[in-house]
Amino acid sequence: MTEKHVIGPFKCHLPQNYKEAYLEIYGIDHFRPSYSVLVLLNDRDADPAKCSKDTPTYSGRFSVFGHAECAGDEGHCQVTPDRRRFDDRPSHALTKAFRRIPITRHLKKACEKSNELTVTLIASCDSGFDGFEGERLLQYDGLQIVAR
Image (cartoon, rainbow, N blue to C red; front, side, top):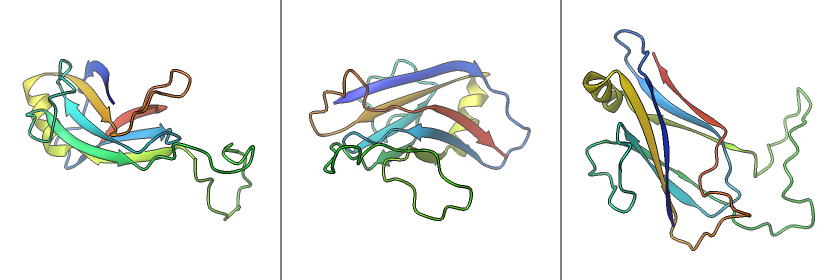
C-alpha cells in the first residue's frame, strides 16, 4: 500500500545563513503496520509508484516500527496521557512518535528556486494494510521546519 500527503504550498520564511534545517513530524500514530515515508520538497505532482531515493526532489526518509495488532487484554493498548510530573516509568509503547529528518541541503536548493515550499510525504508498507475504520497509513498531528 502507498499513499501520498501534500502539505503546502507555504512561504519560505527562514533565517539568513542558517546552518542546519530539519523537518519535524510529531504525533505519529504507530498503531498500524511498519512503514517507510519518503520526504520530497516542491514535488506536489510526485507519482508515489515511481518515487525513490533517486527522485531529484528526494529530501530524506524515515521509518516507523508499527504495532498492527494488540495482543493484550482489553484496555491494554489504550494510551493514558495523564502522568505525574516526576513519574520516571517508561511511556506507553503506543505513545505517539516523533521524527526529525535533516533536510538542510535540499531545503536550500528548493528555496533558491522558489519562495514557496511544498512538502510531499509518500508512505508505503509491504503488508496489505486496509486501514482501521477508514484511517490512513500515515497519521500525524503536525509538522514543522526548524532552521538554525
